[in-house]
Image 1 (spheres, one colour):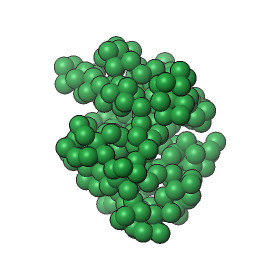
Image 2: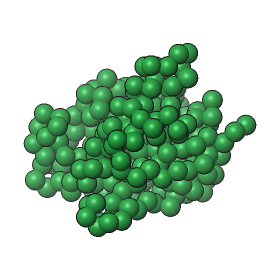
Image 3: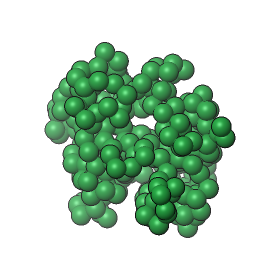
Length: 243
């Protein structure tokens, strides 16, 4: 079977294109490779989004800083660590290009899998009409610390959460998180899992081949092990991209 080509979005050094450098966590590429895919890092060129959508068999939208919210009907929280705006424009253009390819293809051939991680899940949700909680400490108080600094915590998987590869209920397997923002409402996407404090942790589009967003970092969760919520999640996305 031909190995699928998986486009992986990159971040900017210091969250700014003015740094003149991109960066990418090595485990994104290693997990894709371990899952049988060929990783391809994608620079922030919005005008090439449609070309990338055609070229790649699947996509990983990686973690990063916070979205600028003015384009989504509200002000950006003053405490946000705002992402580079060309990166934001590129990833939203990529999501739109993947949508357009799917809508304009016959027989589902253009339905390219997408896995959104942390910031990636937030952008997927905003793209599909959702909203964000821009500062979890306001909502959760000190309990928001559970989601920061790569801390591990369990999930509560919904009855419809089989897309995560585990049965519903509280998981024995923990996930690794590092974020101060979260999806409040996923728009047209479906909620699959929450943290024990109610924070939305996973969403999907059930009518698509594989269109999944997770608030945790599977590339940091049980690295090198084929656990369902760790590298195994990226392996399932790669497998869907090979179909």
